[in-house]
Image 1 (cartoon, rainbow, N blue to C red):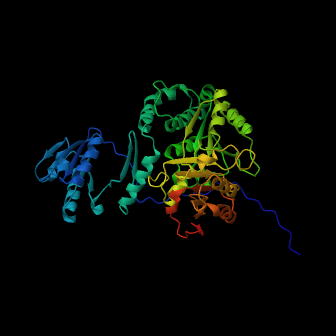
Image 2: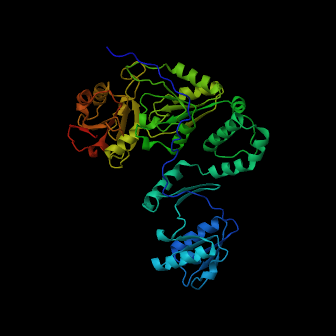
Image 3: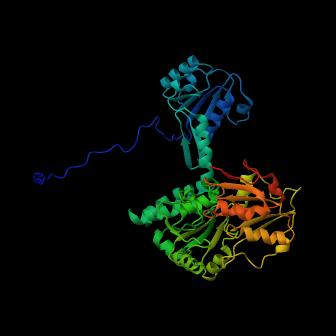
Length: 479
């Protein structure tokens, strides 16, 4: 038998402080150079770029160079055509040199230190007080990126990625924030109300292209009640998160609620704002689905509560996505609605197969058609004679269960049984599957591929050149 457990107690004690930030290779700081003197030694293209940066930051720049590159001569600044001297660094806040060797950089560094100037030697990190990184400029929003000199090309790649995420008007919103900051402090008390206002302001900076001429300063809750919510129909694309548009990503980052189809990939949902509520409202043929009327009612209800609602649809909202019904319902309820397009499955499949749907030697038109009616079977009211046109590229959505019957209808209307066909399942995703073959074999191929994943069928002469490694009737698993 185990001995009885003796009760133990302890007094409250302050928890040991944990380290709140990891080690930094360099401390990022932002230097005010407005009206201050800066010196550039050297006339190279690299020195010209640094001179241009300093001038953009408001510095009074003087360049000392025996010879000047075309880039330096193109700048509107003072250039003295001789080698720098230690006395030239007097009263300089920042001194930069593009030195020919380490000894020249070291001498400049010593002189800068003696003059009380901050020194930077281009590509000579051992003789730098500060280093320049890649810059994203949305002034007064300025983002600096450093890899501690380890990978400048990586820093540039990071800069390009950030550039795509930040709207061009972000600087105007930041300038407006600076302009109204004092008024906000006077009208809204410190605490929740003031913070809520600024949070709402920051969200608007990513949603609205123009800064209002007169920004009403009031608590965010009151503003939401006055303005009301809105709905944005967003195309999530075929599944690969990297195919999402920048505008769609910004909408996801600003959403309060996201109503998404079950065909939307987890990778796309991962890009959404963490605080956003996610609700699945998917509709799949032959499976339990949400009624369209209920989805419409939910969007209206949430928008009337002042929510920013994103209706996230696989592919493009305007291609077999019932967007028209949802827009009509929202318009009737007086709810503002916008649409952000996405890459539809047909275009993603064509890219995956390496096929031009409008190749001038094989097709004079493209038709998108559904292979699935509201009743769950092959639609009866399709223009079968027109669909059987041998010079048309035919893209069939939702045809996994009806593909065999679809092929039989086309053959009955005169389309050749040997017409090239391509099937792509789970297009753009890690488990994408492709098959190429003949129209007469489509039904059997779909039975083998299965319909657990969304299936897109392409029919027409353009698919004779489809890029499938295991061609001729075999199934290729892309992953």
